[in-house]
Image (cartoon, rainbow, N blue to C red):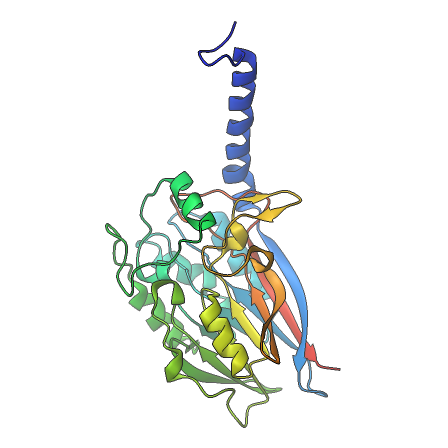
Length: 312
């Protein structure tokens, strides 16, 4: 027996079953298969002691995600020297208390943070196929500071107030410092370029003098931000936003980055060069998804522990 378009019903049924199994795996298993990535980056001045930084990004918390909350809480056992939160903590306006509960143990450590678009605005339901094609075609980003039609305001102010109360430093288009027992660190941060809230002109001029080490922090790794940090002499830039591609093809990699960064650098450690200057770039694949597309394939959710070591 054949289907309407000449495809045998057995084949049609098999393809449907395979697709269904893939969705179950991507949503039910891989999206909840949390991983810790470990990376070593030789960027510190010669003779400086190693620093361990935990980068947390793209949590996209939804109320009721108990496994994610417990896993994030457990990361305090790593005892990092400091924490960098590169944004998109929310995917549900009701989830602020759960984000703070998840990050509570990590907020006992020194930290810095920037926000992403999903901290400011709730996600909207979109056709996943259309979204994917737009990204493949290079269309990305929102219109200035305005959310897409139908987006809701997220109560990001509660996150900011709690982070600030814990001593974490807000890096939204500003500079900040952390004084650790072994070193004083300087940070230069940007608000989210994905919704054009970045204002590099406010922080331009290169690393702060007097600090033992300086780095750049931004949510979305748009090239204009990476170019600015690298041109100004920052040796390390931390970013998130891409979800590592989220839906990847085994042995091939990501199809999209959701920004103008190339797919070869969609996650992990790479470099960025402008003229005769080169920075290390680390892009976190993040540990969550939008609540409207709760799937990952060939790209498990993750948090990264970076060990910064001295240059040789």
